[in-house]
Image 1 (cartoon, rainbow, N blue to C red):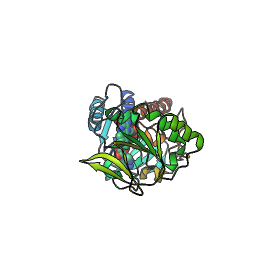
Image 2: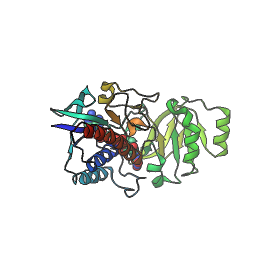
Image 3: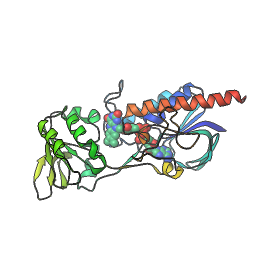
Length: 305
Ligand SMILES: Cc1cc2nc3c(=O)[nH]c(=O)nc-3n(C[C@H](O)[C@H](O)[C@H](O)COP(=O)(O)OP(=O)(O)OC[C@H]3O[C@@H](n4cnc5c(N)ncnc54)[C@H](O)[C@@H]3O)c2cc1C
């Protein structure tokens, strides 16, 4: 049996794509190997009707709703090598081989870590990427923003945005990012402190972040730290060789959501810097709509429907 679509990844993007394709009566296989990108987080914010939900419950409800559509199958399995071409892809799924007319990549991104003592342990608990997701609980507390050379252009933008949640904000550049005089003046006007010394380690008490220790031993009170460690694509995406943009994200045609490989679509974090569950879900719905429109036209005009 050939699936109409193999969806690689069962996060917000993959589950939403599967819902659309199930509604459209397409035979779909969704494979998810875990862990999700937000595995370290205890709750998920900024998704209307699901605000504050545990990430595992979000996925459970998504799967429960898919169960209403008999043409959608969900497997906890890793997708390995994908070969073939539009209309006739083959993929390793767990120990099996499956065939599919189209592929939809909803694989998320892998967050790296930073070589700072305490970073890995506190990631997702006291170190966050997005203030909409985790700012509310720590509003008015001592915040830090760990600027990185990769996102230097976001430094002032992020610092000014973060001021909406707290007056107590320090930007740590670790000496890695040059802050020009105009930006320094803007930060000072907004009451944002700038620390340029290298960050030596993160201090915590009973699992909660308490301070950032700088090289030389100075300590800056910090209860929530925002950071954007480097990200990478998962193996299956890298092995496929789909074109990536200058940020390492899968390049997609904004309307068709198709990648550089005909028949392979993509959605979610792996395609955008606007990374959030609701963006992922919207991207999955969009990619599924595009995939379904062209697949249905093909099947209908070739006597296969
Ligand atoms: C710590 C943290 C907290 C966050 N909190 C929030 C929040 O509160 N609100 C919010 O909106 N966003 C939050 N985000 C962002 C949010 O998690 C992502 O934007 C969202 O999960 C993206 O959805 P996705 O479907 O693209 O990817 P993911 O949710 O990462 O799902 C991709 C899935 O694909 C699977 N996969 C990858 N490769 C394969 C393969 N070869 N075979 C099978 N499966 C595979 C992965 O294991 C994963 O389960 C948070 C992110 C982090 C890091």
